[in-house]
Image: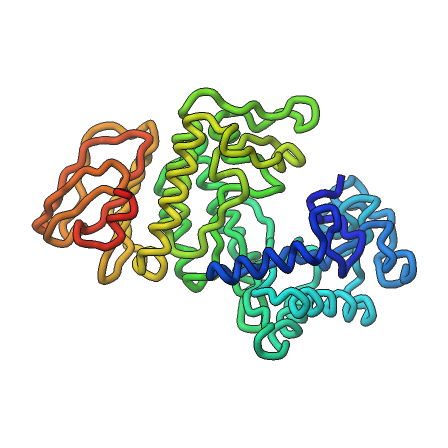
Length: 415
């Protein structure tokens, strides 16, 4: 049942049932040959109960009995000492030998497999010094095997109040980036359920931009601990993951909402994150229903194929567009069911998102589009701007991605 890798049986061995070290070597080599950077999921907070390290060094781990979230062991009081489950011993980071072993685990994986960084699991369950020591150890590796990028899982609830928890772990001595859970929850409400307002998203983004660097936040729609966005959009997020797993939707509406949400994630500043399965619209309730096997191409429905093509093009556009990767975000128009913003640069990109509740034509303000010909990559519609306000028809449930007609990136959607 520990197929997901979060119950470490051996701290420095690749799972042989999926190919072991040889397969991981091939994966890293092929990724690097393709120009990709690869980061590995690092789990320094705990081990599985049958891990030899726990058997041989009981004093490296906190005492059993305090299981996270139980009445006698609430998260709020014991988050750094509780055990996730009775079979996952919690590493006692203040113990030097335990700390040194966990740090050396990171150095081992980075050196052995020429990794480019780590996604660090369960960051708040360890002292802040844990991630800082991992950062220091991996960044001091010999040139050529330096693990320079650290992305942390700092699970939070919604709202601006959660941003302080994210910021706490960032900095030159700590993490490079963290997952943006507050934005994820807002997207669930505004786009997934069509119950929130785009003003909530814009307000959160404004505070984030005052608080964080442009590349410090990894934008997500869901992950392996939350209900899949598609099932949120379907209204099928509350069933028991074992006895009443989420159904794969037949109606196109949740898939359209997923594409709208992907359009937002891929066009915002920060790091767009694609959780396996969201590129084809996989359903899923809570853990473990959200960790389904990725379907093959021949098993996809027509709308799932459309989601895949749309997501691929968003990724290609992001790679092509300097404005999407590095440009500042300028809000243009914000309403309950409609949101428009521009990513600035030599070749700007204007994004317009509308949920199903949008109605009536609307106008982009003066200066939104520089004078000249523009094209909506999604619909193929052409627009001519003289810099004045420009009227757009309502397009409920759709995204517009506007670029100048002479932008080389315009060809991506036409191919």
